[in-house]
Structures are given as C-alpha cells and as structure tokens.
Amino acid sequence: MIKTLYGPFIALCLLLTACASVKPPAADPGLYIAANELPVKIKDGWLTAKTITLGDFSTSSRTNGIAANTPAKQFKSTADAFYFTAKGRDAEQPVQVLSTGKITFSNRPLPEYLNTLAGDAPLWYIFAGATAQDPLKSWELLLKKNIAFLELNDNKPVGILRSATDEIRVTAHNRYGIRNSTDKICYEFQLKGVPVAAVLTGDNPRAWINAKADANVQRTLAAVMLGLLFRQ
Image (cartoon, rainbow, N blue to C red; front, side, top):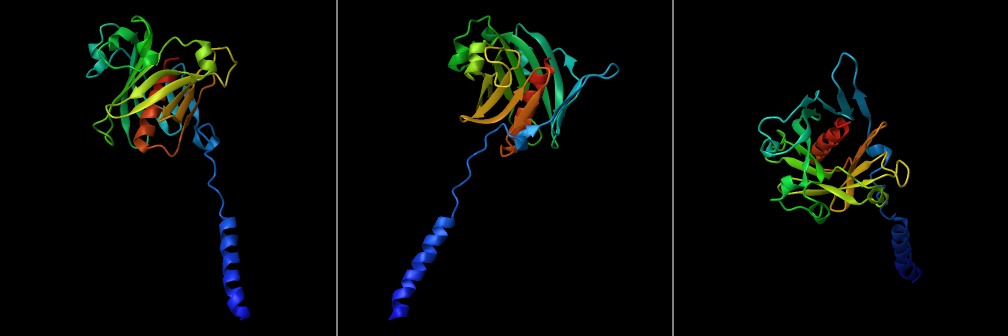
C-alpha cells in the first residue's frame, strides 16, 4: 500500500523538479557587443593607395569616376563618384559610391522619409553588385546626405538598402558622440526592425555585423559599410 501511495508522489516530485530546472531562453544581447564587432583598419600611406579592412573584409584601392555597366551610368547628375572592389569570405563585390539628387529616383518608389525630400536634396548612392555566391542579386543604398542632429538623437530612418526582393532600413544615431551633435554618426541597418549591422564613421570608426545574419547579406552589409567609410 505504501509503495502504491508513494510511487505517483515521487514521480510528480521528479516532474516538478525537472520543470523547475528548465531555464528560460536568454535575452538577445543585441548588436553592439564584442562578439559582433569587426575591427576597422585604414591604410593610407604616402607611397600606397588608401585601403580599408573591416574584420575579414577589405577593399581594393578606389578609382574616381563611375564604373562601366552600373546603373549610375544612366544618372544625369552625379558628384563625388568613385568605385572599388570589396573582398572577403571567398567573394568579390563591385561597389560604386556617388552623390546625386533625390530627383534622380523620381520614377522609383521611395519610403516616405525619402520621398518627402525636395527634388534637389542630395543623397548618397551606393551600388553593391552581385557576387558569385549570389549571382542574381545586386543591392543599392539610398541615404540622406544632410542629417539633422534631432534625427540622430532619436535614431530616425535616413535611408534604405534594398535588392529586388529584400529591404533593410537604415537609421542614424549619435550614441557614441554628444547629444545634439553630428560629429560621430553611426548608421544602423535594420532587417524587419531588428538591427543587423552598424558602422560608426569619423576619426575612430567602428563596425558591427550580427554573426547570425545570412552570409550573403553579411557580405553586402560589409561592402556598403566599407563604401560609407571610404567617403572620408
């Protein structure tokens, strides 16, 4: 009789103990942690061309102008144009950087925060071509060139990185600088509202890419961030 009574009781205790020992899933630590940070190195010697390394990604030297066979060849007005090759993780990606007016994209759908800009408002444009690993997908970045400190204070959206099938929102903040300042702008890339990469521009650049992001997306994010760093 004792065995009959205590058997179910012991089993219930074991079950409750097992349930109590199950730990809840750990909270997402976010993007800006050491595990996601990529060291940035800029080489710009007297006798060598400027190049940039971002973790295991790197650039060729830059060439002024607009590369052949890029969409920018059709733009009527451009400035500050240059191009280079982004390399890393067994891939090479052609990258074009330039400035042009918002009116250049008047025949394309734009998010409201870009669409409401005046036609002559300057934008940074970065085209990241396809790679051998993802041969059918190229990306383009449209980014406000003039950003007010009030936008930075609130990490407001200032651009978009998109392909034919995907969109990544770009915001900008000054958390690594002084509030009400535009000295240290950090561009944050958000996929479906979740930050997946960021690059801090200025004299002491830093960069982060979520190690869990898709490999091809990581390559493009690195290429675009190298383009943003190369503007300086």
